Image (spheres, rainbow, N blue to C red):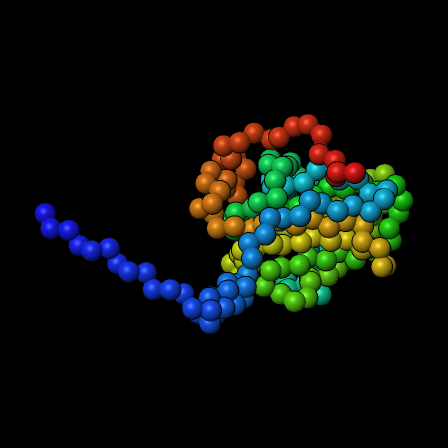
Length: 196
């Protein structure tokens, strides 16, 4: 068998190296979701992927893409306590919080990775009551991968912020939007506390 000479590596010149670094710097960086942020007096009760309960009604929300938000009948069952979510129609993710005081007409913001402005609507958060907040992929144009962020504000004070990394479904095999077919059981136990 005849051998071939090894290729000779051409030296990388400074202009080519600088161009390569500039191209790499321009690419979006992959980022893990940040840990949830909570204002004093706000407690995270649960978060992650949940089973969507029955929709009781719709509330007008003109500053959202669909023009409304769904109001659920009861609180959902969180099946997976994680911040990574597959981009699948019917998939739902969010959080449950409580607050030690009332927040009248708190501003809810949903930041999508493909938008420079959030969807906004207003709702009350009553002291001591569990308040659920979430997002469900109901239409195909919502299936945008990247970091999604759910925030709540009382005036200039941020009450909470949580990020979810929406990924192609192939990255999370076995997780589907139909909670009857999830291969994983609910994750019991306390919600991890934010580091001090």
